[in-house]
Length: 176
Image 1 (spheres, rainbow, N blue to C red):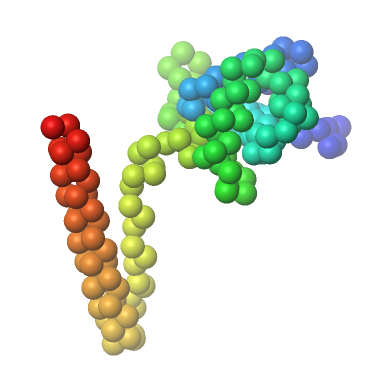
Image 2 (cartoon, rainbow, N blue to C red; image 1 turned 90 degrees about the vertical axis):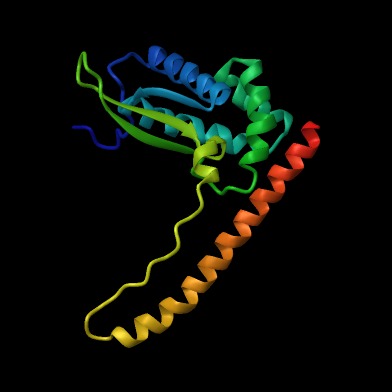
């Protein structure tokens, strides 16, 4: 019986699994995004998130503990430097797994795992405005609530456009 045996062995011996996870964690910290199979990404998430939590507190003991897992001084420096600065106020959930489909050769499920705060595309995307639910019965209240939200949304869009124009002008001045 498999009582209380929760982690995935990934078809490897314990030493091989530890070495693989350490190498993947180093690659993730250095490159901020790696492509791998879904099973390995899930195992890596459990392996690297406690290390990132340790990286938020820059003490000698924390560095030694992280170095014991990673065995790469450049990755440790990166973790305690730029990565710790970006995730300093985040209470957890430092990585994101996004599924990409299936590998052609063996039909393994492929995904990429990335550090959440380092994805420029997700950071730039404005959050969608919350939509109001409409029903056929009480149409009067939904229309009253929707009108002020639409005005707020339009003013917010105008402000974003103005700031974008100002940034473009500043960069043009800086280039001259």
